Amino acid sequence: MFKITTLSAILFSYKKLIKINPVTTITYFLSTVLIGTFPGIQAFLITDLIYSLLKKNTESSLNLFLFLSVISFIQIIAVSLQNLTANTLFNRLQTLQALDLINITRRIPIIDLETEDTQFLISRAKANGSSIFYLIEGFQGLLQTIIAFTGFVIYTFSLNIFLCIIFLVSILIYSVSSFIQSNREYESQKNLTFEERQASYLTNILTNVDFSKEVRIYNFIDFILSKWEEKVTKIKNVTISLQKKHYKQNILINGTGFLMVGVFFVSTSISIYYGQANIGAFAGLVSFISQLTPMINNVGSTLKTFNINKNNITELLSFYRTFENDLKPVSKGVIGRTSNNRIIRLENVSFKYPNSEKYILKNINLEIKSGQTLAIVGLNGAGKTTLANIIAGIYEPTNGQVFINDTDYSDVDKKLIYNQIGYIFQNYLKIEGTLLQNISLSDESIGSMNSRQLDFIFKCGFRQDELEKVLGKQFENVQLSGGEWQKAAFARTFFHGKLLYILDEPTAALDPKTEVEIFNLFNELALNKANILITHRLGSITHADKIIVINDGEIIEVGTHHSLINLEGQYKRMFDTQAQWYRNGDVVNV
Image (cartoon, rainbow, N blue to C red; front, side, top):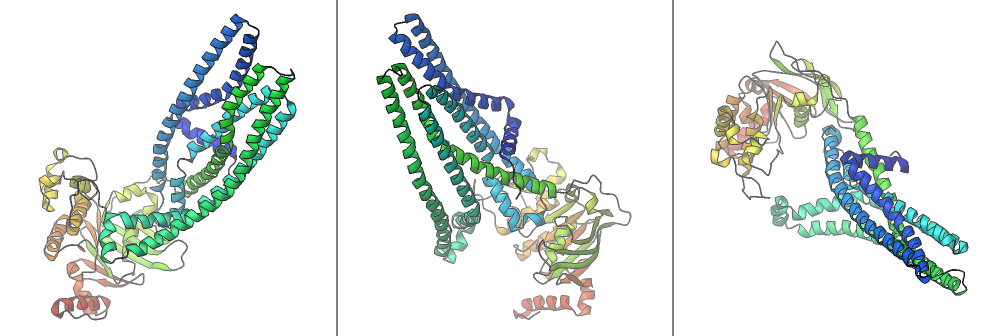
Protein backbone atom coordinates (compact mmCIF):
# COMPACT_ATOMS: atom_id res chain seq x y z
CA MET A 1 0.00 0.00 0.00
CA PHE A 2 1.36 3.40 -0.94
CA LYS A 3 1.96 6.10 1.68
CA ILE A 4 0.89 9.73 1.67
CA THR A 5 2.13 12.69 3.67
CA THR A 6 0.09 14.25 6.43
CA LEU A 7 -0.27 17.42 4.35
CA SER A 8 -1.61 15.41 1.38
CA ALA A 9 -4.17 13.71 3.60
CA ILE A 10 -5.32 17.06 5.02
CA LEU A 11 -5.57 18.69 1.57
CA PHE A 12 -7.45 15.67 0.18
CA SER A 13 -9.92 15.85 3.05
CA TYR A 14 -10.48 19.60 2.72
CA LYS A 15 -11.10 19.19 -1.01
CA LYS A 16 -13.82 16.67 -0.22
CA LEU A 17 -15.44 19.02 2.30
CA ILE A 18 -15.18 22.02 -0.03
CA LYS A 19 -16.86 19.91 -2.72
CA ILE A 20 -19.81 19.51 -0.33
CA ASN A 21 -20.09 23.21 0.57
CA PRO A 22 -17.19 25.69 0.46
CA VAL A 23 -18.91 28.32 2.65
CA THR A 24 -19.73 25.78 5.37
CA THR A 25 -16.19 24.39 5.27
CA ILE A 26 -14.60 27.85 5.58
CA THR A 27 -17.01 28.76 8.40
CA TYR A 28 -16.10 25.54 10.21
CA PHE A 29 -12.38 26.34 9.90
CA LEU A 30 -12.64 30.02 10.93
CA SER A 31 -14.86 29.24 13.93
CA THR A 32 -12.25 26.74 15.12
CA VAL A 33 -9.43 29.29 14.79
CA LEU A 34 -11.52 31.93 16.56
CA ILE A 35 -12.32 29.63 19.49
CA GLY A 36 -8.62 28.95 19.95
CA THR A 37 -7.88 32.67 20.46
CA PHE A 38 -10.50 33.28 23.15
CA PRO A 39 -8.73 31.80 26.23
CA GLY A 40 -5.71 34.07 25.74
CA ILE A 41 -7.77 37.18 25.03
CA GLN A 42 -10.01 36.54 28.04
CA ALA A 43 -7.02 35.89 30.35
CA PHE A 44 -5.43 39.22 29.44
CA LEU A 45 -8.76 41.04 29.76
CA ILE A 46 -9.47 39.51 33.20
CA THR A 47 -5.99 40.47 34.39
CA ASP A 48 -6.46 44.06 33.24
CA LEU A 49 -10.02 44.18 34.62
CA ILE A 50 -8.98 43.11 38.12
CA TYR A 51 -5.98 45.46 38.01
CA SER A 52 -8.34 48.33 37.06
CA LEU A 53 -10.76 47.40 39.84
CA LEU A 54 -7.92 47.37 42.37
CA LYS A 55 -6.88 50.81 41.10
CA LYS A 56 -10.55 51.90 41.31
CA ASN A 57 -10.49 53.04 37.69
CA THR A 58 -14.25 52.92 37.02
CA GLU A 59 -14.26 53.93 33.35
CA SER A 60 -11.50 51.52 32.39
CA SER A 61 -13.12 48.71 34.41
CA LEU A 62 -16.49 49.29 32.70
CA ASN A 63 -14.93 49.27 29.23
CA LEU A 64 -12.97 46.12 29.97
CA PHE A 65 -16.08 44.43 31.38
CA LEU A 66 -18.12 45.31 28.27
CA PHE A 67 -15.30 44.11 26.01
CA LEU A 68 -15.03 40.86 27.97
CA SER A 69 -18.80 40.35 27.68
CA VAL A 70 -18.70 40.88 23.92
CA ILE A 71 -15.82 38.43 23.56
CA SER A 72 -17.71 35.84 25.64
CA PHE A 73 -20.83 36.32 23.51
CA ILE A 74 -18.80 35.90 20.29
CA GLN A 75 -17.30 32.75 21.83
CA ILE A 76 -20.78 31.30 22.32
CA ILE A 77 -21.70 32.11 18.70
CA ALA A 78 -18.43 30.61 17.42
CA VAL A 79 -18.95 27.36 19.35
CA SER A 80 -22.52 27.09 18.04
CA LEU A 81 -21.32 27.72 14.46
CA GLN A 82 -18.58 25.13 14.86
CA ASN A 83 -21.07 22.48 16.05
CA LEU A 84 -23.62 23.33 13.35
CA THR A 85 -21.14 23.32 10.47
CA ALA A 86 -19.48 20.14 11.77
CA ASN A 87 -22.79 18.25 11.88
CA THR A 88 -23.78 19.54 8.43
CA LEU A 89 -20.48 18.53 6.82
CA PHE A 90 -20.44 15.13 8.53
CA ASN A 91 -23.94 14.18 7.40
CA ARG A 92 -23.39 15.31 3.82
CA LEU A 93 -19.99 13.63 3.69
CA GLN A 94 -21.59 10.31 4.64
CA THR A 95 -23.79 10.52 1.54
CA LEU A 96 -20.95 11.66 -0.73
CA GLN A 97 -18.61 8.88 0.42
CA ALA A 98 -21.28 6.22 -0.01
CA LEU A 99 -21.94 7.51 -3.54
CA ASP A 100 -18.21 7.51 -4.39
CA LEU A 101 -17.86 3.95 -3.12
CA ILE A 102 -20.88 2.81 -5.15
CA ASN A 103 -19.64 4.52 -8.32
CA ILE A 104 -16.21 2.91 -8.07
CA THR A 105 -17.54 -0.51 -7.06
CA ARG A 106 -20.03 -0.60 -9.92
CA ARG A 107 -17.15 -0.19 -12.40
CA ILE A 108 -14.91 -2.86 -10.91
CA PRO A 109 -14.96 -5.93 -13.17
CA ILE A 110 -17.08 -8.69 -11.61
CA ILE A 111 -14.18 -11.11 -11.80
CA ASP A 112 -12.14 -8.78 -9.55
CA LEU A 113 -15.11 -7.94 -7.36
CA GLU A 114 -15.45 -11.62 -6.43
CA THR A 115 -11.92 -11.89 -4.98
CA GLU A 116 -11.14 -11.85 -1.27
CA ASP A 117 -8.56 -9.05 -1.71
CA THR A 118 -11.12 -6.75 -3.33
CA GLN A 119 -13.74 -7.53 -0.70
CA PHE A 120 -11.17 -6.71 1.99
CA LEU A 121 -10.41 -3.34 0.35
CA ILE A 122 -14.10 -2.54 -0.03
CA SER A 123 -14.72 -3.48 3.60
CA ARG A 124 -11.92 -1.14 4.71
CA ALA A 125 -13.20 1.63 2.42
CA LYS A 126 -16.67 1.34 4.00
CA ALA A 127 -15.17 1.48 7.49
CA ASN A 128 -12.97 4.45 6.58
CA GLY A 129 -15.66 6.54 4.89
CA SER A 130 -15.99 8.90 7.88
CA SER A 131 -12.24 9.26 8.31
CA ILE A 132 -12.15 12.34 6.07
CA PHE A 133 -14.29 14.31 8.51
CA TYR A 134 -12.61 12.89 11.61
CA LEU A 135 -9.18 13.79 10.23
CA ILE A 136 -10.27 17.42 9.71
CA GLU A 137 -11.98 17.44 13.10
CA GLY A 138 -8.76 16.18 14.68
CA PHE A 139 -6.58 18.60 12.70
CA GLN A 140 -8.73 21.60 13.63
CA GLY A 141 -8.89 20.41 17.23
CA LEU A 142 -5.10 20.33 17.34
CA LEU A 143 -4.91 23.72 15.61
CA GLN A 144 -7.34 25.17 18.14
CA THR A 145 -5.28 23.80 21.02
CA ILE A 146 -2.01 25.07 19.50
CA ILE A 147 -3.46 28.58 19.11
CA ALA A 148 -4.76 28.53 22.69
CA PHE A 149 -1.52 27.06 23.99
CA THR A 150 0.53 29.72 22.18
CA GLY A 151 -1.46 32.37 24.02
CA PHE A 152 -0.87 30.48 27.27
CA VAL A 153 2.89 30.39 26.65
CA ILE A 154 2.94 34.13 25.95
CA TYR A 155 0.89 34.78 29.07
CA THR A 156 2.94 32.59 31.43
CA PHE A 157 6.28 33.56 29.95
CA SER A 158 6.13 36.85 31.82
CA LEU A 159 5.31 35.04 35.05
CA ASN A 160 7.90 32.24 35.09
CA ILE A 161 9.95 31.18 32.08
CA PHE A 162 11.24 28.04 33.79
CA LEU A 163 7.77 26.67 34.46
CA CYS A 164 6.76 27.57 30.92
CA ILE A 165 9.57 25.40 29.52
CA ILE A 166 8.63 22.48 31.78
CA PHE A 167 5.04 22.73 30.61
CA LEU A 168 6.14 22.69 26.96
CA VAL A 169 8.23 19.55 27.52
CA SER A 170 5.30 17.84 29.27
CA ILE A 171 2.98 18.54 26.35
CA LEU A 172 5.61 17.24 23.92
CA ILE A 173 5.93 13.95 25.84
CA TYR A 174 2.15 13.63 25.98
CA SER A 175 1.87 14.20 22.23
CA VAL A 176 4.57 11.67 21.30
CA SER A 177 2.97 9.07 23.55
CA SER A 178 -0.43 9.67 21.92
CA PHE A 179 1.11 9.38 18.45
CA ILE A 180 2.66 6.00 19.29
CA GLN A 181 -0.64 4.79 20.79
CA SER A 182 -2.57 5.84 17.68
CA ASN A 183 -0.27 3.80 15.42
CA ARG A 184 -0.81 0.74 17.61
CA GLU A 185 -4.60 1.21 17.52
CA TYR A 186 -4.61 1.63 13.74
CA GLU A 187 -2.63 -1.57 13.19
CA SER A 188 -4.92 -3.38 15.63
CA GLN A 189 -8.05 -2.22 13.76
CA LYS A 190 -6.55 -3.21 10.43
CA ASN A 191 -5.47 -6.65 11.63
CA LEU A 192 -8.94 -7.34 13.05
CA THR A 193 -10.79 -6.47 9.83
CA PHE A 194 -11.07 -10.11 8.73
CA GLU A 195 -12.41 -11.23 12.13
CA GLU A 196 -14.91 -8.34 12.14
CA ARG A 197 -16.18 -9.34 8.69
CA GLN A 198 -16.55 -12.95 9.84
CA ALA A 199 -18.40 -11.87 13.00
CA SER A 200 -20.71 -9.68 10.92
CA TYR A 201 -21.38 -12.60 8.55
CA LEU A 202 -22.21 -14.93 11.43
CA THR A 203 -24.47 -12.29 13.00
CA ASN A 204 -26.34 -12.08 9.72
CA ILE A 205 -26.87 -15.86 9.69
CA LEU A 206 -28.22 -15.76 13.24
CA THR A 207 -30.55 -12.79 12.73
CA ASN A 208 -31.58 -12.79 9.06
CA VAL A 209 -35.06 -14.20 8.49
CA ASP A 210 -33.94 -15.77 5.19
CA PHE A 211 -31.71 -18.17 7.13
CA SER A 212 -33.91 -18.70 10.17
CA LYS A 213 -35.75 -21.83 8.93
CA GLU A 214 -32.61 -23.74 7.98
CA VAL A 215 -30.75 -22.63 11.11
CA ARG A 216 -33.55 -23.96 13.30
CA ILE A 217 -34.44 -27.13 11.44
CA TYR A 218 -30.83 -28.30 11.56
CA ASN A 219 -30.46 -26.96 15.09
CA PHE A 220 -27.05 -25.44 14.51
CA ILE A 221 -27.69 -22.14 16.32
CA ASP A 222 -25.27 -23.17 19.08
CA PHE A 223 -22.61 -24.08 16.52
CA ILE A 224 -22.87 -20.71 14.72
CA LEU A 225 -23.11 -18.89 18.05
CA SER A 226 -19.91 -20.56 19.28
CA LYS A 227 -18.11 -19.47 16.11
CA TRP A 228 -19.45 -15.93 16.56
CA GLU A 229 -18.33 -15.85 20.21
CA GLU A 230 -14.89 -17.09 19.14
CA LYS A 231 -14.46 -14.19 16.71
CA VAL A 232 -15.94 -11.57 19.05
CA THR A 233 -13.82 -12.81 21.96
CA LYS A 234 -10.66 -12.48 19.89
CA ILE A 235 -11.61 -8.93 18.87
CA LYS A 236 -12.50 -8.05 22.47
CA ASN A 237 -9.32 -9.53 23.95
CA VAL A 238 -7.00 -7.77 21.51
CA THR A 239 -8.82 -4.46 21.98
CA ILE A 240 -8.98 -4.64 25.79
CA SER A 241 -5.33 -5.70 26.05
CA LEU A 242 -4.26 -2.68 24.04
CA GLN A 243 -6.57 -0.36 26.00
CA LYS A 244 -5.17 -1.56 29.33
CA LYS A 245 -1.64 -0.87 28.15
CA HIS A 246 -2.62 2.62 27.04
CA TYR A 247 -4.61 3.36 30.21
CA LYS A 248 -1.55 2.66 32.35
CA GLN A 249 0.52 5.04 30.25
CA ASN A 250 -2.19 7.70 30.32
CA ILE A 251 -2.54 7.54 34.14
CA LEU A 252 1.14 8.40 34.45
CA ILE A 253 0.96 11.16 31.86
CA ASN A 254 -2.29 12.69 33.21
CA GLY A 255 -0.92 12.53 36.74
CA THR A 256 2.10 14.47 35.57
CA GLY A 257 -0.16 17.02 33.89
CA PHE A 258 -2.20 17.44 37.07
CA LEU A 259 1.01 17.94 39.02
CA MET A 260 2.11 20.64 36.57
CA VAL A 261 -1.17 22.54 37.03
CA GLY A 262 -0.62 22.40 40.81
CA VAL A 263 2.92 23.68 40.40
CA PHE A 264 1.62 26.59 38.35
CA PHE A 265 -0.89 27.57 41.02
CA VAL A 266 1.66 27.30 43.84
CA SER A 267 4.28 29.21 41.86
CA THR A 268 1.88 32.00 40.97
CA SER A 269 0.66 32.21 44.57
CA ILE A 270 4.27 32.58 45.79
CA SER A 271 4.92 35.24 43.16
CA ILE A 272 1.87 37.18 44.33
CA TYR A 273 2.92 36.83 47.98
CA TYR A 274 6.34 38.30 47.27
CA GLY A 275 4.93 41.04 45.06
CA GLN A 276 6.35 39.63 41.82
CA ALA A 277 2.82 39.28 40.39
CA ASN A 278 -0.60 40.68 41.18
CA ILE A 279 -3.96 39.10 41.93
CA GLY A 280 -5.08 39.99 38.41
CA ALA A 281 -2.42 37.75 36.94
CA PHE A 282 -3.59 34.92 39.20
CA ALA A 283 -7.22 35.40 38.15
CA GLY A 284 -6.18 35.48 34.50
CA LEU A 285 -4.21 32.27 34.99
CA VAL A 286 -7.19 30.55 36.63
CA SER A 287 -9.42 31.59 33.72
CA PHE A 288 -6.83 30.47 31.19
CA ILE A 289 -6.25 27.07 32.79
CA SER A 290 -9.99 26.44 33.20
CA GLN A 291 -10.39 26.72 29.41
CA LEU A 292 -7.06 25.28 28.40
CA THR A 293 -7.20 22.18 30.64
CA PRO A 294 -9.97 20.44 28.64
CA MET A 295 -8.07 21.18 25.44
CA ILE A 296 -4.86 19.78 26.88
CA ASN A 297 -6.69 16.71 28.19
CA ASN A 298 -8.05 16.16 24.72
CA VAL A 299 -4.68 16.55 23.01
CA GLY A 300 -3.96 12.86 23.45
CA SER A 301 -7.28 11.60 22.12
CA THR A 302 -7.35 14.26 19.38
CA LEU A 303 -3.85 13.40 18.24
CA LYS A 304 -4.67 9.69 18.26
CA THR A 305 -7.85 10.30 16.29
CA PHE A 306 -5.96 12.47 13.82
CA ASN A 307 -3.20 9.93 13.23
CA ILE A 308 -5.53 6.91 13.00
CA ASN A 309 -7.70 8.70 10.46
CA LYS A 310 -4.66 9.85 8.52
CA ASN A 311 -3.70 6.18 8.15
CA ASN A 312 -7.29 5.32 7.25
CA ILE A 313 -7.28 7.94 4.52
CA THR A 314 -4.08 6.39 3.18
CA GLU A 315 -6.06 3.17 2.79
CA LEU A 316 -9.02 5.03 1.31
CA LEU A 317 -6.85 6.77 -1.28
CA SER A 318 -5.14 3.47 -2.01
CA PHE A 319 -8.55 1.93 -2.72
CA TYR A 320 -9.58 4.82 -4.99
CA ARG A 321 -6.32 4.97 -6.90
CA THR A 322 -5.94 1.22 -7.21
CA PHE A 323 -9.28 0.73 -8.91
CA GLU A 324 -9.34 4.04 -10.74
CA ASN A 325 -6.01 3.12 -12.31
CA ASP A 326 -7.07 -0.45 -13.03
CA LEU A 327 -10.42 0.47 -14.54
CA LYS A 328 -10.24 0.50 -18.30
CA PRO A 329 -11.35 3.69 -20.03
CA VAL A 330 -14.87 3.45 -21.36
CA SER A 331 -14.86 2.61 -25.07
CA LYS A 332 -16.74 5.00 -27.31
CA GLY A 333 -17.68 2.54 -30.04
CA VAL A 334 -21.15 1.46 -31.04
CA ILE A 335 -22.65 -1.95 -31.71
CA GLY A 336 -22.95 -2.38 -35.45
CA ARG A 337 -25.52 -4.24 -37.51
CA THR A 338 -25.04 -7.75 -38.78
CA SER A 339 -25.98 -8.90 -42.25
CA ASN A 340 -26.07 -12.64 -41.55
CA ASN A 341 -28.31 -12.79 -38.43
CA ARG A 342 -25.26 -13.69 -36.36
CA ILE A 343 -25.72 -12.08 -32.92
CA ILE A 344 -22.92 -13.60 -30.81
CA ARG A 345 -19.61 -15.09 -31.90
CA LEU A 346 -16.82 -16.52 -29.75
CA GLU A 347 -13.40 -17.15 -31.26
CA ASN A 348 -10.85 -19.30 -29.41
CA VAL A 349 -12.12 -18.16 -25.99
CA SER A 350 -10.35 -19.47 -22.91
CA PHE A 351 -10.85 -18.33 -19.34
CA LYS A 352 -9.25 -18.74 -15.93
CA TYR A 353 -9.84 -16.89 -12.70
CA PRO A 354 -7.27 -14.38 -11.38
CA ASN A 355 -4.37 -15.97 -9.46
CA SER A 356 -5.31 -19.40 -10.81
CA GLU A 357 -3.49 -21.58 -13.30
CA LYS A 358 -6.49 -23.79 -14.09
CA TYR A 359 -8.50 -22.90 -17.18
CA ILE A 360 -12.27 -23.11 -16.63
CA LEU A 361 -12.94 -22.76 -20.37
CA LYS A 362 -10.63 -23.90 -23.15
CA ASN A 363 -10.60 -22.74 -26.75
CA ILE A 364 -14.36 -22.20 -27.14
CA ASN A 365 -15.64 -21.39 -30.65
CA LEU A 366 -19.34 -20.69 -30.93
CA GLU A 367 -21.97 -18.80 -32.93
CA ILE A 368 -25.50 -17.83 -31.91
CA LYS A 369 -27.85 -16.45 -34.54
CA SER A 370 -31.05 -14.48 -34.37
CA GLY A 371 -34.08 -16.74 -34.06
CA GLN A 372 -31.92 -19.56 -32.70
CA THR A 373 -32.15 -21.23 -29.30
CA LEU A 374 -28.89 -22.66 -27.99
CA ALA A 375 -28.91 -25.04 -25.01
CA ILE A 376 -25.79 -25.50 -22.88
CA VAL A 377 -25.63 -28.68 -20.82
CA GLY A 378 -23.02 -30.52 -18.82
CA LEU A 379 -22.17 -31.83 -15.39
CA ASN A 380 -21.81 -29.53 -12.39
CA GLY A 381 -18.61 -27.51 -12.60
CA ALA A 382 -18.21 -28.06 -16.34
CA GLY A 383 -18.14 -24.29 -17.05
CA LYS A 384 -21.70 -23.64 -18.27
CA THR A 385 -22.45 -20.54 -16.18
CA THR A 386 -18.94 -19.20 -16.71
CA LEU A 387 -19.47 -19.41 -20.46
CA ALA A 388 -22.82 -17.61 -20.11
CA ASN A 389 -21.14 -14.87 -18.05
CA ILE A 390 -18.54 -14.35 -20.77
CA ILE A 391 -21.25 -14.16 -23.43
CA ALA A 392 -23.11 -11.62 -21.26
CA GLY A 393 -19.95 -9.50 -20.92
CA ILE A 394 -19.78 -10.02 -17.15
CA TYR A 395 -16.43 -11.79 -17.42
CA GLU A 396 -13.73 -10.97 -19.94
CA PRO A 397 -11.99 -13.90 -21.64
CA THR A 398 -8.41 -14.60 -20.68
CA ASN A 399 -7.71 -15.38 -24.32
CA GLY A 400 -9.77 -15.03 -27.46
CA GLN A 401 -12.49 -12.63 -28.57
CA VAL A 402 -16.24 -12.21 -28.17
CA PHE A 403 -18.35 -10.35 -30.75
CA ILE A 404 -21.89 -8.98 -30.74
CA ASN A 405 -23.22 -8.17 -34.22
CA ASP A 406 -19.61 -8.59 -35.42
CA THR A 407 -18.48 -5.86 -32.97
CA ASP A 408 -15.71 -6.83 -30.56
CA TYR A 409 -16.84 -6.52 -26.93
CA SER A 410 -13.61 -4.68 -26.09
CA ASP A 411 -14.45 -1.91 -28.57
CA VAL A 412 -17.68 -0.78 -26.90
CA ASP A 413 -18.90 0.35 -23.50
CA LYS A 414 -20.12 -2.58 -21.41
CA LYS A 415 -23.40 -0.74 -20.85
CA LEU A 416 -24.18 -1.02 -24.56
CA ILE A 417 -23.66 -4.79 -24.34
CA TYR A 418 -25.77 -5.11 -21.20
CA ASN A 419 -28.55 -3.12 -22.89
CA GLN A 420 -28.82 -5.87 -25.51
CA ILE A 421 -28.90 -8.83 -23.12
CA GLY A 422 -31.58 -10.21 -20.79
CA TYR A 423 -30.33 -12.67 -18.16
CA ILE A 424 -32.17 -14.82 -15.60
CA PHE A 425 -29.55 -15.76 -13.03
CA GLN A 426 -29.71 -18.79 -10.78
CA ASN A 427 -29.66 -16.43 -7.80
CA TYR A 428 -31.88 -13.75 -9.23
CA LEU A 429 -32.64 -10.39 -7.67
CA LYS A 430 -35.57 -10.15 -5.26
CA ILE A 431 -36.38 -6.48 -4.75
CA GLU A 432 -38.23 -5.62 -1.56
CA GLY A 433 -40.50 -3.26 -3.52
CA THR A 434 -43.64 -3.51 -5.62
CA LEU A 435 -44.14 -6.30 -8.12
CA LEU A 436 -44.11 -3.67 -10.87
CA GLN A 437 -40.72 -2.38 -9.67
CA ASN A 438 -39.40 -5.95 -9.68
CA ILE A 439 -40.43 -6.34 -13.31
CA SER A 440 -39.71 -2.90 -14.78
CA LEU A 441 -36.74 -1.97 -12.53
CA SER A 442 -38.08 1.58 -12.47
CA ASP A 443 -40.68 3.76 -10.78
CA GLU A 444 -43.11 3.41 -13.68
CA SER A 445 -46.75 3.41 -12.65
CA ILE A 446 -49.45 1.31 -14.23
CA GLY A 447 -50.88 4.42 -15.84
CA SER A 448 -47.60 5.26 -17.58
CA MET A 449 -47.21 1.83 -19.19
CA ASN A 450 -48.32 1.09 -22.72
CA SER A 451 -50.72 -1.68 -23.63
CA ARG A 452 -47.93 -3.95 -24.92
CA GLN A 453 -46.13 -3.82 -21.58
CA LEU A 454 -49.29 -4.49 -19.59
CA ASP A 455 -50.34 -7.33 -21.90
CA PHE A 456 -46.92 -8.85 -21.44
CA ILE A 457 -47.16 -8.72 -17.64
CA PHE A 458 -50.64 -10.25 -17.71
CA LYS A 459 -49.37 -12.92 -20.06
CA CYS A 460 -46.75 -13.83 -17.45
CA GLY A 461 -49.58 -14.71 -15.08
CA PHE A 462 -49.87 -11.55 -12.95
CA ARG A 463 -53.06 -9.57 -12.31
CA GLN A 464 -53.28 -5.79 -12.40
CA ASP A 465 -54.30 -5.58 -8.73
CA GLU A 466 -51.06 -7.38 -7.77
CA LEU A 467 -48.69 -4.94 -9.44
CA GLU A 468 -48.65 -2.26 -6.72
CA LYS A 469 -48.24 -4.67 -3.80
CA VAL A 470 -44.93 -4.41 -1.93
CA LEU A 471 -43.21 -7.78 -1.89
CA GLY A 472 -40.86 -9.39 0.59
CA LYS A 473 -40.53 -9.83 4.33
CA GLN A 474 -38.98 -6.54 5.38
CA PHE A 475 -41.81 -4.05 4.87
CA GLU A 476 -45.30 -5.32 3.97
CA ASN A 477 -44.68 -9.04 4.58
CA VAL A 478 -46.28 -10.04 1.27
CA GLN A 479 -44.79 -13.46 0.63
CA LEU A 480 -44.28 -15.03 -2.77
CA SER A 481 -43.49 -18.66 -3.43
CA GLY A 482 -40.20 -19.56 -5.10
CA GLY A 483 -42.06 -20.17 -8.33
CA GLU A 484 -43.77 -16.76 -8.21
CA TRP A 485 -40.47 -15.02 -7.59
CA GLN A 486 -38.98 -16.90 -10.54
CA LYS A 487 -41.90 -15.83 -12.74
CA ALA A 488 -41.22 -12.22 -11.72
CA ALA A 489 -37.57 -12.67 -12.70
CA PHE A 490 -38.69 -14.17 -16.01
CA ALA A 491 -41.01 -11.21 -16.65
CA ARG A 492 -38.20 -8.78 -15.80
CA THR A 493 -35.89 -10.42 -18.33
CA PHE A 494 -38.32 -10.08 -21.22
CA PHE A 495 -39.93 -6.78 -20.20
CA HIS A 496 -37.54 -4.72 -22.32
CA GLY A 497 -36.75 -5.96 -25.80
CA LYS A 498 -33.24 -7.45 -26.13
CA LEU A 499 -31.13 -9.05 -28.85
CA LEU A 500 -30.10 -12.00 -26.67
CA TYR A 501 -31.71 -13.79 -23.73
CA ILE A 502 -29.80 -16.03 -21.33
CA LEU A 503 -31.77 -18.28 -18.97
CA ASP A 504 -29.73 -20.10 -16.32
CA GLU A 505 -31.93 -22.80 -14.76
CA PRO A 506 -35.06 -20.68 -15.39
CA THR A 507 -37.57 -23.23 -14.07
CA ALA A 508 -35.68 -24.74 -11.15
CA ALA A 509 -38.33 -23.66 -8.61
CA LEU A 510 -41.42 -24.26 -10.76
CA ASP A 511 -43.94 -27.08 -10.66
CA PRO A 512 -44.39 -29.07 -13.92
CA LYS A 513 -47.56 -27.22 -14.92
CA THR A 514 -46.01 -23.75 -14.44
CA GLU A 515 -42.81 -24.95 -16.11
CA VAL A 516 -44.75 -25.86 -19.24
CA GLU A 517 -46.52 -22.49 -19.16
CA ILE A 518 -43.21 -20.64 -18.81
CA PHE A 519 -41.57 -22.50 -21.68
CA ASN A 520 -44.61 -21.95 -23.89
CA LEU A 521 -44.39 -18.26 -23.07
CA PHE A 522 -40.65 -18.34 -23.69
CA ASN A 523 -41.13 -19.90 -27.11
CA GLU A 524 -43.53 -17.09 -27.98
CA LEU A 525 -41.44 -14.21 -26.60
CA ALA A 526 -38.09 -15.53 -27.81
CA LEU A 527 -39.22 -15.79 -31.40
CA ASN A 528 -36.71 -14.11 -33.75
CA LYS A 529 -34.32 -13.54 -30.84
CA ALA A 530 -31.06 -15.23 -29.94
CA ASN A 531 -31.57 -17.40 -26.85
CA ILE A 532 -29.37 -19.43 -24.52
CA LEU A 533 -30.76 -22.01 -22.12
CA ILE A 534 -28.70 -23.57 -19.34
CA THR A 535 -30.50 -26.37 -17.61
CA HIS A 536 -30.19 -29.80 -16.07
CA ARG A 537 -33.75 -30.68 -17.14
CA LEU A 538 -32.91 -32.07 -20.52
CA GLY A 539 -36.54 -32.77 -21.38
CA SER A 540 -37.11 -29.01 -21.69
CA ILE A 541 -34.48 -28.50 -24.43
CA THR A 542 -35.39 -31.24 -26.90
CA HIS A 543 -36.66 -28.60 -29.35
CA ALA A 544 -33.56 -26.37 -29.08
CA ASP A 545 -31.99 -25.50 -32.43
CA LYS A 546 -28.55 -26.41 -31.14
CA ILE A 547 -27.26 -28.13 -28.03
CA ILE A 548 -23.65 -28.02 -26.84
CA VAL A 549 -22.27 -30.35 -24.20
CA ILE A 550 -19.45 -28.97 -22.05
CA ASN A 551 -17.09 -31.14 -20.08
CA ASP A 552 -14.08 -29.85 -18.16
CA GLY A 553 -14.28 -26.49 -19.94
CA GLU A 554 -14.40 -27.85 -23.47
CA ILE A 555 -17.22 -28.35 -25.97
CA ILE A 556 -17.27 -32.09 -26.54
CA GLU A 557 -20.58 -32.49 -28.39
CA VAL A 558 -22.65 -30.20 -30.65
CA GLY A 559 -25.93 -30.94 -32.40
CA THR A 560 -29.68 -31.20 -32.08
CA HIS A 561 -31.40 -33.45 -29.57
CA HIS A 562 -31.88 -36.24 -32.10
CA SER A 563 -28.36 -36.06 -33.52
CA LEU A 564 -26.83 -36.14 -30.04
CA ILE A 565 -29.01 -39.11 -29.05
CA ASN A 566 -27.76 -40.93 -32.14
CA LEU A 567 -24.19 -39.98 -31.22
CA GLU A 568 -24.58 -42.03 -28.03
CA GLY A 569 -22.17 -39.84 -26.06
CA GLN A 570 -22.44 -37.97 -22.79
CA TYR A 571 -25.66 -36.17 -23.73
CA LYS A 572 -27.46 -39.48 -24.37
CA ARG A 573 -26.21 -40.88 -21.06
CA MET A 574 -27.51 -37.83 -19.17
CA PHE A 575 -30.81 -37.87 -21.02
CA ASP A 576 -31.35 -41.59 -20.47
CA THR A 577 -30.60 -41.18 -16.77
CA GLN A 578 -33.29 -38.55 -16.37
CA ALA A 579 -35.74 -40.48 -18.54
CA GLN A 580 -35.29 -43.51 -16.33
CA TRP A 581 -36.16 -41.42 -13.24
CA TYR A 582 -39.60 -40.96 -14.71
CA ARG A 583 -39.92 -44.60 -15.82
CA ASN A 584 -39.10 -46.47 -12.63
CA GLY A 585 -37.33 -44.11 -10.22
CA ASP A 586 -33.96 -45.88 -10.58
CA VAL A 587 -30.85 -43.73 -10.70
CA VAL A 588 -28.19 -44.70 -13.21
CA ASN A 589 -24.63 -43.37 -12.97
CA VAL A 590 -23.74 -41.02 -15.81
